[in-house]
Image (tube, rainbow, N blue to C red; front, side):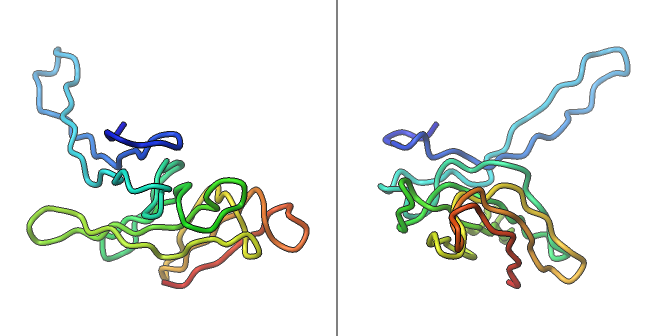
Length: 137
């Protein structure tokens, strides 16, 4: 958990790499932090990442988090993108911030061969029962 985070912790995106070992030795792994969500209240740049990440054909990662400035009883959530940079770091950007009327609290994300993102939210929409969404980055 990042220092200074509230609600319920900012979170990180990380990569595990298997370290070569003899066939009889247990697997060993090294962790690399790709992105550490900042402690900017109230999660305006995203926090509490959850669920699986998806890759596009260019190697960008897309994910969901519970952040944002729109309030649905808690931040409504957002879709974010991590783009690999030449220096080995990853650039974070917000793809979409939910506002309640277009959904709230996203759960699950998938991508098609054209790079369109699909998912669902548990709340928001016309009847506050959630929505199915498509985002074309």
